Structure formats: structure tokens, C-alpha cells
Image 1 (spheres, helix red, strand yellow):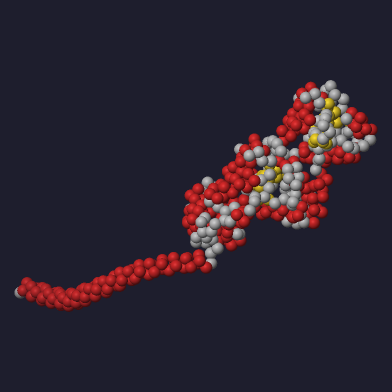
Image 2: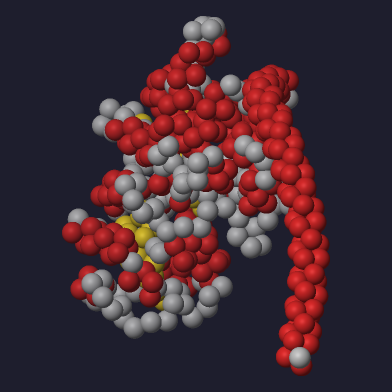
Length: 508
């Protein structure tokens, strides 16, 4: 009985647990129904979102097509704006855009180098570098501040010197196309002046100032930039200008010596036998290194830049005395046109230059007519004593002696060695102004050797205390000669008087 009761109790407990499980299963079924409803709704939302995304994608594609169309419109507008800007705002010619496109590409010979060669500063270059088209911005500035012909020629010349032939050819083609727009008349070209100025573009402003002062002094000068166009006509006019010139002034600088075009001008001048007067525009070695060295080694230059203490207080870059020296040398080859000399220039320079020119003395031949002869006294010296030697030259000239002094005789661009050779061979007496630098100078040794070889009377003047005979190759010639000492009283070398000077006059 007890077993039955226990069984019944167990069955009742199992029944209760079954009922509880049935209830939980019912709740789980309800929740599953809710989840199925949620999944159905989520699927519906996903479909709706997919449809929406499709619509958005279609809108994006439509907007992309519209953007492409807008981009084409913008490009066309930019081109029109640039064209309008070029026509109304830019000072640069049409070809400058093609050249700018080449020069904007970063290389060693790009727009930055051209800017520096045209004289612009690093700050200018930095400012242009911020522009969309740096080279074109530079061209615009350049043509805004220069005459079109001068600006064009400067760019073409510098591009050639930079070896940017690709860009230079664009300029040359543009100039060639414009060549026949108008024809030059004979009246416009006129006769070339008698002075041709050869220079490198970096000194254009200085050379313009020099040209202006020369014309005020009676000498019309020809600067390529002032009277030449471009293209093939450029070189033809350079040739014409040099051939017509009586004197060529070479404004020598480091860039000038390296310039292919300047080398061509110098070589043509030498080939045609034109007198050349070199002006040293900046401190540099002489003769200049490179292909001009052998040519200029035979010429005496005029230092045409100011040193400390030589400032003129105005825009001139040369010392007063050097311009007078230039006028003096020009007078050896051609007289000035007095009709164009201004009074101010005459008072300042021309009167001085007239008194400085050495006129060869006249001799009478067998027929009784007068002929020009060589100076009797050749003065050999080293340039460190030039002020004292110039005083000696003036003193002897006042006493009636005709003297040869390089700075007084090297007029009109003569060859140095040719003039010295003729001067020594034609003189009667050679004054050898001996100093330590003189004895070591190769040129001075040549003068003494030539004087000895041609059996000229040599009178040594000892201008500073030193051993006698001086050390070096001159000793063989000078050891047999008695010198006149002028070193004990340095002031005598400025006055040139006293017993030693009287002794010199007797020996002459």
C-alpha cells in the first residue's frame, strides 16, 4: 500500500513537471512567433533600404554626369578667362605662354635661372613661385617694365646662353613670323655709329648709362638692344654694326667672358682688325679665363668700376678719371662730333681728355715735309707706381721730350705687345723704372730684353730700396748699368726735380 502511495505521489510530481514544461514551451512558442514577425519586418526594412540605396546610387550617377558636364564648362570658362586675361591684363606676348610651359618644368635651366640672369632677386622668384604659372608671372613683370623689343631680345639671348634652345626657338619663330608685318625703311636704320658696344645683358643698365654719356661727349655708340630686333636679322645687324664701327668697346665681366654671343662679337672684331678697348666692369682676373683669354692678354683694360673712396655721389658706376681715360683712348681712333657735345660734359671730361692725349712729334724728311715720328723716350714701369710715372711723363713732356707711356699710347684698342714693340724699336732711350715688382714682372722683363736686344740706351731709375742688380732674369742686362737712385726721398717721385732728376736729363 505504501508502495502505491509513493508511486502515485511520484506520478503527481511528474505530471506537475510536465505541465510546467508545457507552459514554458507555450511561452517559447509565443516568443518564436514574435521573432518570426520581427524577422519578417526586418526583411521588409532591408528591402526598403535596398530600394532606397538603388535610388541614391542612381542619383549619384546622375550627379557624376552633371559634374563631368560642369567640369567641361569650367575648363572652357578657365580657357576663356585666361585668354581674356592675356588680352586685357598680361603685358607678355602670346609666345610667352609656350615658353613658360617649358620653363616651368623644374631643371637646372628653368625659369628661376632666367629670372636671375634678367636681374631679379630671390624675393622676386619666391613671390612668383606662389603663382599658378611662375614663368608667365615673371614674363608679365618683365614686359611691363621694359620695351617690348629690348625685353624680347634679352629673353632670346639669355635662353641661348642657358642652352635652352627649345625655348629660344619658340621666340625666334614668333619673331620670324612677325618679320614681314612692316618693312624697315632706310631712314629708320640709318648709318651705324662709329662705336660698337659689346656687353652681357647683366650690365645693360650700366651700359645704357655709358652710351648716354658717350653721346653727350660727342661719340655716337651702338648697343645691340637699342637698335636690333630678333631672329635672323639680329646676327646680320651685329655683323653690320661691328663692320661699320671704328672702335669696339668690350664691357668685360665674368658672364661676358662665358657668353657664346659675346665671344662671337669679340672674335669678329679681331678678325676684322677692329680696335678693341676693354672696360673691366667688375673685379675679376685678367685676362679673363676661357676663349677670350688669349685675345685680351694683348690689351690693356680700363678698370671701369668704383673702388672705396671713388664714389661719385650719383648714378655713375665708373670713377671720373676712368671715363676721361676712355675718352682719351677714343681720340686716338676718331674725333668727337663737336655738334652733340654738351657744355656740362665738355667742362667735366672733354677738356681734361684733350690735355692728356699724346701727340707724336713731327720730324722733317729730306723733302722738307713733316712726318709723324715715334716718341724719343720709352718709359718702362710696373703699374704699382703708375701715379709717380704719370708725373714723370708730364714733367718730361713739359721739358720738350716726346715720351712713350702705355696708358697714353694704348689708344683706340691697340694690341699691347704690338704697340710696345713699335715703341721700343722707335725710341732712342728706355727709362727702366726699377722696383721689386718690376723685376718680377714678365711684361717688364720682355721690355728690358727687347731694349737690350735692339741696343737701345737703358737708364735704370731705382724707385725703392733693394739689392742691385735686382734678382731674376733682369740681372744679366742691368748689372752692367749705373742706376740713378730716386728712393731716398719719396717726394721727389712726385715732383721730379733735384740733382738726381738733373742727372737723368743729362743722360737722356
